[in-house]
Image (cartoon, rainbow, N blue to C red):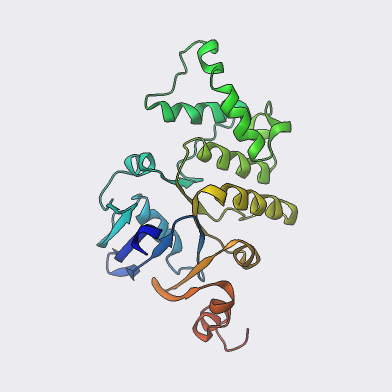
Length: 251
């Protein structure tokens, strides 16, 4: 089973001046799955994400990615290993076009700095892959559109495209459908399912219909601790989960 795990935490904890935001979280994410991290407001989900990518430093515990201890590593180094947090690391420049944004993201895989000073001819070599990524996220019709002009749901699709440009083995999606209209939720959900076909996804998501539709495994957090884990049917029937979400015994 150990070979099947891509991300593991042992006793992961974070304390802020006496307040324990995350307490001894032991997480096991299997390779090639969609794993959801859910819980009521203040459960510690975003703090967990920040710890995994080291935007925050753990107070205690260890993090392993692909069997390698990454505790204490810099966020940029973690991204280079193949663990990328979308909507945080992805660079979307509002006044560049969709194509230009994805092309800039592709430059990161070259290992150097952005080639803003390079000739158009050099940059155009990246166009083929950029167009493939744009098409993959359903933005082919928007390639020349300035990012700031995109509808909200399409902007999130662009952020996923710029994340995919880094060719991550594992993507962390932080509330990918937050604030979206129904049709955008369906579009982004379908997109997540497609991009997860050959990689691992860990997502924080409030929309339980999305969680039910997409997730192989769900970890429920409450007050910084793991309350329950399993498939949707298992956690939805768990009385502790119902209590945490509803504040009563009623589903």
